[in-house]
Image 1 (cartoon, one colour):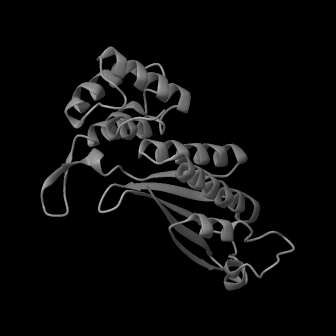
Image 2 (cartoon, one colour; image 1 turned 45 degrees about the vertical axis):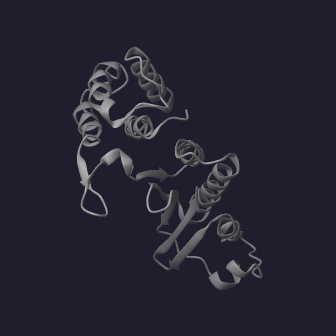
Amino acid sequence: MSGGWVCSALLRVLQQFMSETAARLALRGTVESLRLSLDTATTEDLSRLIEALELATRQFVDPCRRPQMMAQLRAQLAPSEGPEGTATSASAEVRATTYLVRTEADASHARLAARMLCESLGGRGYECQKVATAVSELARNQISYAGGGTIQLAPQLAPKRLLRVSAEDSGQGIPDLERVLSGTYQSKTGMGLGLLSVKRLADRFDVRTGPKGTQVDFEVWL
């Protein structure tokens, strides 16, 4: 679902509390019932959208988790300080979302979420494919060599529009990191393979690794 900033922010909250399909259905139905558009809804529509979502999501969310979900939805209404001290909507700088990666299904979910987020930010097909491919490579490495990890997606609007991805694990680290990144290292186990591809796909790339784990940060500019 490609949408404007407001609907994209709401969708990411909903996906934390229900399936992706249910989140899409609930949001789309709510937007249409209010005669709004996914692409053009603005911060002025947030209050109405959130109020309507409270009813529309009841069949999808555990009652025990509903207060937390509504609190996160209402947090989109809170103003934050802009770079020059002016109030801006929280939806203008969308909050980061972290995905736990333990299985292939988790990896697929993180990859799809990254692609959807890139599209919602206005990314072109090639840019969104770069993000999805990089997230997939990192998630596979986490599962295969570190028993899993986390992937955080953090969109940014200003001063440059981009998607920042941080992948962390608690594995044993990547040996010969410099050779891996130079393309001269040939691993018998496959550890580190794909990392060079992520570096080539990224507009900014950084990796820190050691015996307590690995963290990879990269950005794709949109």
